[in-house]
Structure formats: C-alpha cells, structure tokens
Image (cartoon, rainbow, N blue to C red; front, side, top):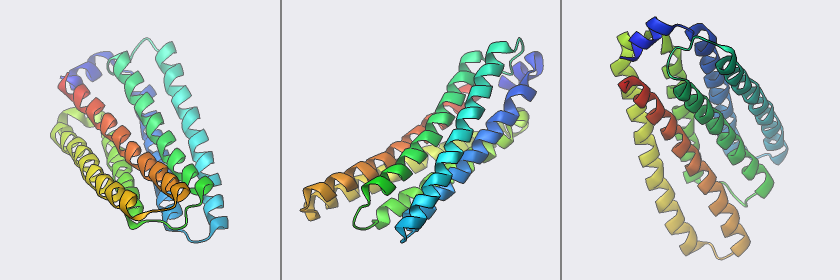
Length: 212
C-alpha cells in the first residue's frame, strides 16, 4: 500500500505542503476564470487576467521547488516518477486555466455563452476537489476510499463537460454564420474542455498512486 511507502521512506514534509500550495493557487485561478466568464466590463476582465497571470507565475515557482526537492532529496514519500507526474499535471492544469482566461480576453467574443460558464463552474469544482485531495495526502490509509471517490468525481466532471462541449459545438456550427466569431468561440470552448481533460489526468494519477 502507498501508506506503507510513506511510512518507510518519509520525505512527505518536503512535498505535501507544496502540493497543497499549488492546489490553493489552482483554486484561486479557477475562481478568477469564473469571474472573467461572468464579467461584462472588458477593463475588469483585463485586470482579472493580470491577476491570473500572477497566480500562474506563482505556480511556476512552486513547480520548480517540487522539482528541486525531487532532485536534492534522498527520501521521497512515493515513487519519484509519481511525484514528477503529479507535479507536472498540476502545473499543466494551472496553465490551462490561465490559457482559457487569456483567450477570453484576447479574442473578445461578441458574447459569453452560458455553456462556457457551466464549464467554468465545473473547472472550479475540479480545483476544489484537488485541494481536498492534497489536503489529505498525509492520511492516505485512513481516507483512501474518500480520495478515490473524489478522483471518480473528477472523471465524472470530464464526462459531463464532454457532453456540454459536444452540444455546444453542434449548435455553434449550425447557428454562427460569421467565420471569425465561429473560430473565436470554437477555440475558447476547446480550451475550456481541454482544461477538464487535464484535471482528469490528475485524478487518474492519484488513483494509480493509491493502487500501488
């Protein structure tokens, strides 16, 4: 069991706080994304985007610290590849949230579709679930089933977003006659959908770690 590896090798004090810190940044970024999706003022959108960029930079620093600890530490709480994979997926999730927000601000679509906001809310739920998962990294044995359940919920969200995405795209190509606007909308919703795919990869990574 993974808990046995934690106890035998230690090193969790070097990594668990960093995963929690990264999760907190992801929650903050997801909340900013939802704000941008709902904001009507373009100037306010730009300000929120600047805040998002700062959060993304902080995430890069945390990811670098995870890599540095992995390189320097002789004791790790679980497999080095697992640590590297999880850290990489979390950084990618944060990057994708930032990329989605950036597209919204750069493209300036004529309107924000309700489907985009629905996906944004789902991304925020992914972020909260990830925060809850990393908060319990030091209690894997006691809370293993609860963690698996949260990972399963992340997978469900990805499937739900797939349905929203497919319905939206079908409607978009039928209703939107302006080619430029169609391209904007397509790229934005694709970025949002891709973000939930990365969240699912994080859940899959955690479930694999639990299975070891």
